[in-house]
Length: 102
Image 1 (spheres, rainbow, N blue to C red):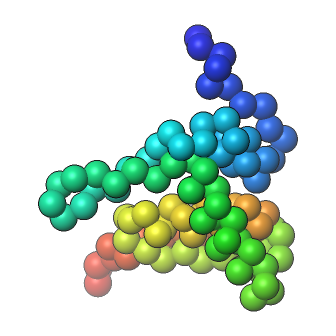
Image 2 (image 1 turned 90 degrees about the vertical axis):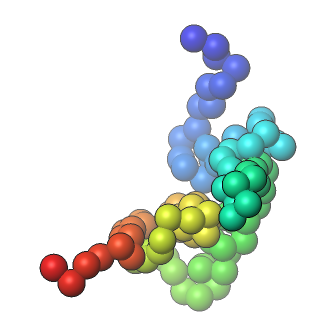
Image 3 (image 1 turned 60 degrees about the vertical axis):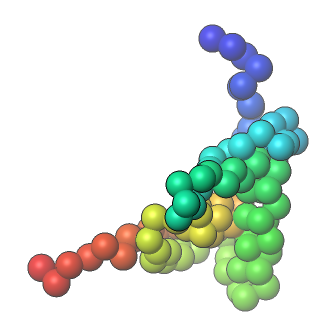
């Protein structure tokens, strides 16, 4: 196994930070657009945007280990919000919005 992809971290926030430092502009994932093209989001962008969301949540009063509900369609904003929540030390309780009346 190629060890150049291994990151040793003691927490999720540290893992995201180290991945941003190591993989910088490489794509963490990509989002398909309406025209079928793909827009990548780098490890650096993922960490930076997640951190901004996390800082905002802390300013709003979110505490570490506090559960926070996350309702969303499957989209990049869900991933960014989830990363932001993880970076605060809070606990994500995700739920898709594809519920039916049954």
